[in-house]
Image 1 (cartoon, rainbow, N blue to C red):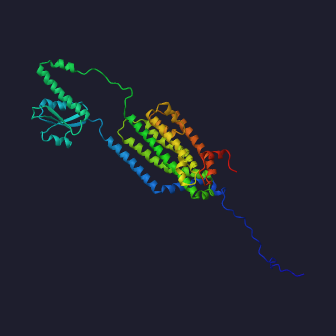
Image 2 (image 1 turned 90 degrees about the horizontal axis):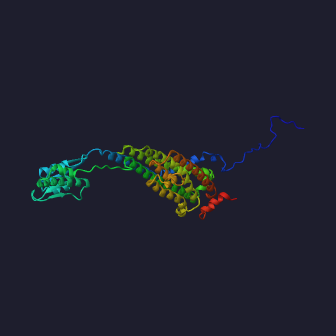
Length: 433
């Protein structure tokens, strides 16, 4: 036997090294955790928010909102409680007629009478130095002529005519030798009062203005940014980008991220508009603006967020049914129909907010995003109606998002011809093998 040196290795090859097999990322890897939708949302915010169109739209809305505030402040500077001022030029009138023109005006008017020559009349009226001229023609011997620039000012014309009639009547009473007291009794106004069943006031105007603007804000934001979601889905599907995205995130996370990301961009525009409306209302000359007019603005934002989740999911669903940009308009038509229905019914709510149709449309989830802020601004929405409408809208939005996410899984990778909406919905009942 041969002795073996204990310090000598007996193996001629190094030991084999084994390693765990590596696998490609799968849909169930760590990138598919619940926070993946945040990455998609951030991507949409950064990508779409940096686009020139979005930045220009944001600047334009900010300028318009600021302009609304400035305009409201400027108009509120007018002293509505002060007298209405007017200047009357007179030519060759006697003292009684001249005094009557200044004294015959109502208390809410302040009349200034200035002497003119016959040669100055036309220029004074045309240049706005006087509002109207009263001229005794033929150097004071002819009939009276009233000179306006283009057309009479209704109230001022009445003041001038009443003054001239009063002077002429007094002259005829004196000429006929009638008792002035008896004539005064005959001319005495009747004792009558005026009563309004529903008198208009500033609060009605404020309500109507805010209500009308909420309609256009909701329609603009939902229609424009909902369509953008559909176009983004179609664009990514046509460019096969969606295949890469779905290798990293779930379809539901992809859908949620797009709705949240584009929804944030849309919400910023809604906030800019709502803030401008609130500021304009605050600095305007409206008195006793009801709380409901202000409350409708934050309600508009809450309703918009729920409505955008609902309509945005539907836009994404119909966008996933086509693979070509040419089919986009036809594909998104089903998503725009309920928007236009809600938009049309909101004008009924604007004209008759207490009607049965307006109250129903303020609760039904498809139409409530448009009618609920309108009815609230008009002061015709009770607390329970608002709570019920928001609850139904939230539940409907959740159901539509869930439905859209489910259909999204089946249609997002299908290419070729357009998938009918009915077929996509049937996939929920009979999923593909």
